[in-house]
Length: 298
Image (cartoon, rainbow, N blue to C red; front, side):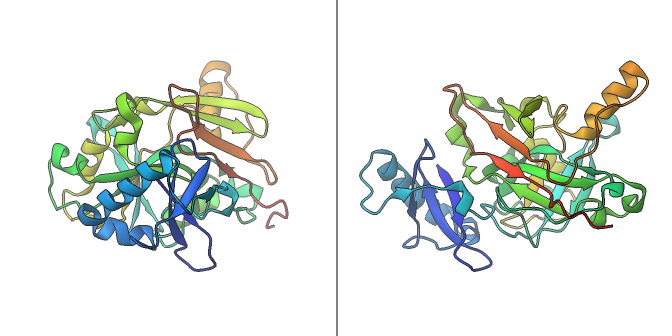
């Protein structure tokens, strides 16, 4: 099924079920008003949300309405923790942990940053979990993946952010829709999504990143993340940047091939769009489109 959170003026928004084609939605108020509620009591509430999803897709939901991503907050507007994986030595990832108290919506304008801070986008796939017990093996940890979302993890790569994790990862914007892994069908195998992330910078495609190319699947990533502590329902864990889905990755490739990078960092006013399409050519999560404010901080 597919879930989203509409902006109703509150911190956590209003949970809705979204049709498979992203055309219509239906309030989930009678089941759960917020996504965190559903995550906290998933085994009881998810089947009810699934019934509503099926009814919506059959065109029989009496109070369905047109779905507009511009009215969405992040599917999970805030969570217990945000953890991102970066490739490490010997197969074990390096971790960065950033604030989970506020996730940006798919169309939310990002705050102004000083271009000297080296602002960068990062196309990633993230899992929203249920409870993951401490020291869970990979297979057990994978079962705790409740939803998948696309993420643009804003990174500051300039000297002022070096060594300062919270400052270096100030914001993350999510796709309008979160999907359960089974919604992906054959594209979900072994804790990996076998679809490409399409990344556009303004109107030009800059990357087609294979989400399955992540060094570890979500089962292995979660097993690493919960070795010494449990993860609570609503935790968000991301793959880290995929392929050339960031300016830094493209600059590194240019440096290696040409001896000098030519790709510029993310500039104020530029829009970066991230999307994934299924085998039918339809958007799976909707598009996250992020634009740093043009009045850059000096």
